[in-house]
Image (cartoon, rainbow, N blue to C red; front, side, top):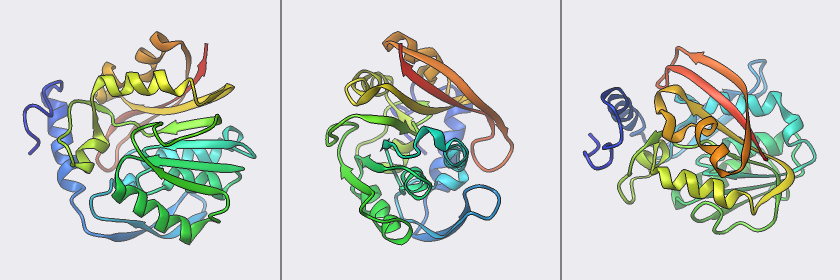
Amino acid sequence: MLNKSTTKLMNDEQKDLVNTQKEKHSHEDFLVDYDVSGEKDILNGFLIQKDVWNPFIASGRYHARYLFYHNELFLDKTVLEIGCGTGLMGIVMAKYGAKEVVMSDISNKAVENTKLNIKKFVSEKTISVVQGDLFEPVEGKFDLITWMIPFFAGYPEDGDTISASMIMPPELFERFLTEARNYLKSDGVLLIPSFALGGELTDPAKIAPKFGYSVKTTWSHKSINNLQQGWIYMHELKLA
């Protein structure tokens, strides 16, 4: 169970789900065969290590598929993934047409996991991984920046990489939106998902316009499988 200070911004339904997710993400190292397209474009033996978020039992599987079918966002372009975790999104973009991919995560465990998957699935010449807090280790400007944000507002305990993957302080999202302007090309796109149960504090459609972005909700899906059941959305943000 997560402590009360971690979940103090959540209602009871949100607390129940994050505690369930915390339990389900307590795993050892394992491999997954993931069909990116749904038509047998399979990443065979994709590695998920201990203490790294499993995107395939949450909304990550939708995020990766959205990228696959909207490759105009990254084809022959320079892209950045914040909070890369296992490296799934960056690997999909590198494998299916991105010119250059940079991935960043604050967790050294996630960075290690991502590097191992890169060696298996894509050329290291087109993709790189850096470690740090949001944009701290990042240089340059990008055509696309994507972040599979933690959907719930709260304050994860220091060192708890799993809870930090599903819970973020509202001020962290605000800092991301403020700093992203310095790394996004003038015609670039921020691609960010949201989850209806997450609430307004982590909803890009509610928060991003306050920071000078126009928001277009380009996709919605009512998930009935795995942990995050309910409406999931994808938002494309541009500098207003």
